[in-house]
Image 1 (tube, one colour):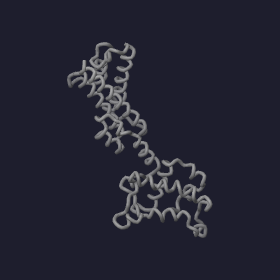
Image 2: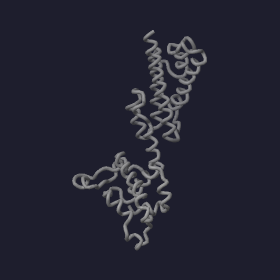
Image 3: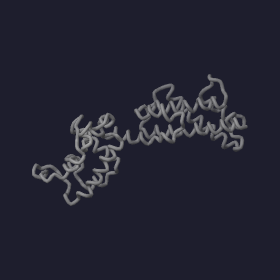
Length: 252
């Protein structure tokens, strides 16, 4: 691949890049070649060490650093394929090492978009509560971060109402506060002291008030996917608490 020495001329900088940083750069270098360009992985790596490059004035990494450079380049290409950002070409060509960018791989126009994609993959679907692990998770992966946060917190609100046995018209912070009211709320854990009961009530009310109510009344920007991940994981944890309190209430 002839582009890395031009884009990252210092070999020490190349070797210092974290895998996720180099992955994104490699994908964008492939994009710059041609929208539908098909490449051979082996030939792509051999290009980097073309002996005739110096004759045409093309930058090259030192030949004595070849083994060091080859490994991160190979890792980056392997990761891109493992994530289905590059995929085998059709038929015989694919069987012989030819690849092209996938539909997802063609969406990234800059490094910022790729970083958002990497961050979005931090959302641990397998660890999320079943209520928000499927449909709402898909909206997050498509970049609808405010929608996903709203859906997660709305699920918390519904779960609290159902577990507490409140009517369908009940909603919002007042309903949350009644469900977890100190010593009297249907979802209150009477084995905890009053301070802990109030703290849990405040946690639920704060989450609904900050992350659900605001998004249902107006468009609230979420600056980064990481911010959305943190809110959604909190929603998942709250749903687990509701499940535990509902089970305890039923057992009692």
